[in-house]
Length: 298
Image 1: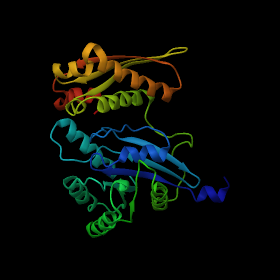
Image 2: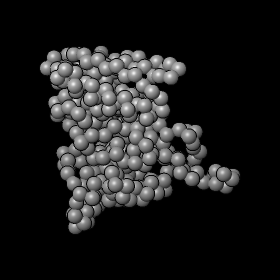
Image 3: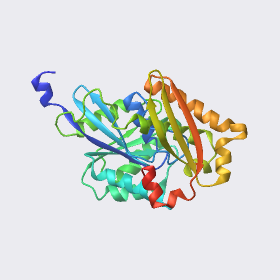
């Protein structure tokens, strides 16, 4: 890259916000071309702030995937929502995502009330347009034009890669000129240990009933890299004995299924053989216990 091109590089942080299940993590995985943020059809899958770094010829866009903003009840949920709100303060541009196929009006109202307080550039992405009729999309665009002065409103499908290029171009043009903040080969700031925790948690979300995922947490107790093998011990924490039985399943069938699917994803991520040992522990009322939430990293 010559000197002139280097001087034209744009870089900065873009906060992806929205209601639970708006498709934020799906968008992040799509723009990166690889999976770093867990997804499921259940809302509130993401609990942590995750960076995804997109390197383009003339820009470095650092996306911040935040937890879904919603009315919170437990201490865990209050911390999660607080983390998402805090992320807005540290970014240069805000990408607000709305599920066009299934509106969450209370969350949208809460988010827009926060957006009105910030002078930052805001781009609106109307996601899941593959699930709605064209007339409905035009109606949504008009509705949101009345609600706030967005820099752009772009209908997209994160899952099917529809108009994602337009999002990247709009965001890139909104960033200030400045050097790349991360080495070009870097695509996230999270560790392999963190990714292992998230992969296991995703399998719990995808394979168990509605109640279990929100009462479960995962800790990686040990992560040892041997010559030809990575040995991982991890614990799935639940709040009741009955939930422990569900996670383990009949003769250990559910835990085996979670472990097998997680191990395959971890092997794909690390490029090495993995021995994954999972344990299930009852950690009562952890979602409202400050000390345990701190230990779990929330």
